[in-house]
Length: 104
Image (cartoon, rainbow, N blue to C red; front, top):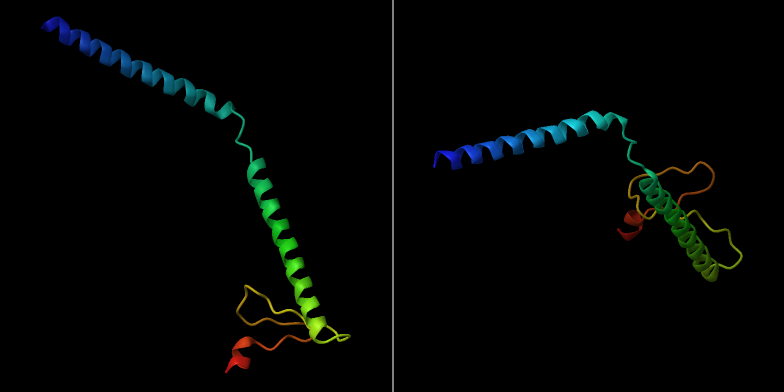
């Protein structure tokens, strides 16, 4: 029985030593590895940005066409921001009256 326990302890000691050795080697190599690339993340951000730009352009064009159908030949007023509910200023042109004041 004594021999079995000594074999078990020996295997356990070898396992611990090999595990330490494996991690020690990787920790020494880690500073020399290439950093992870941001190419995928940047590609997703660029695609999302341009999707938003195209979506905004299409939305504005639909707004203009709808306005021209109802008021042919008139200047199209500025389109109210869709996702922004707070106050907003316009320096060149007139802002559209808010929906909150027209619905009351």
